[in-house]
Length: 197
Image (cartoon, one colour):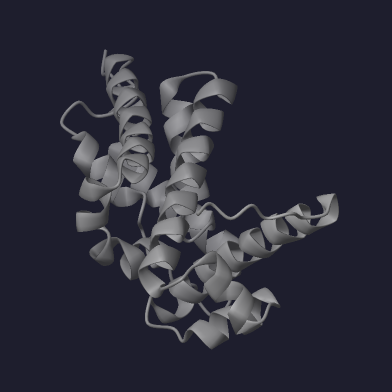
C-alpha cells in the first residue's frame, strides 16, 4: 500500500536543508578522511542526528552515490560557467583548472572515485552528469588547440587528469597562493609555444 506523507510546508524545506547539509558535510569529510569516515562523524559535521542521516541515506553506498552526483554536477556547472563567461576556450579551460584546484577536487576524487566505477556504469544519472563534464572538457580542449592557444599534442585525458591535481602548500604561503603558483606552472606546460617569425 502506498503511504502518503503529510507534511507542513516548512517540514519539506527542513528535510531538503538537512539533505543538503549532509551532502556538503560528507564532501568535506570524504575529502579529508576518505569514504570510510564513520557515519556519526558525518552526521555531527552536518549538525544532524544519525537517524536523520539514515532517513535520507539508508547506507554508505547511497551516501557515496548522492555525494558523487553532487560533486559531478558541481564540476559540470563550474565548467559550463567558465565556458559561458570567458572570452575563449583557452581562458575557460584555465579558469576551470584553477577552480578545480581551489575546490580541492583532487582530494575528493581520490576518496570517492575508486568506489564509483561500477556505480557510474549502473546509474544513468551518474553516467549522464559525468558525460557532461567530459564533453565540456573535451570541447574546451579541442577548441583551445584549434585556436593555437594550446599545444596540439595534449590529449583530453591528460587535461582531465589535471582536474584532480592535488596541491600542497609551502609553510610561507596560503592555499590560494599555492594554487595560483602550481596551476600557472601547469598551464605554461599546456600553452602553445609562441610562433617564431
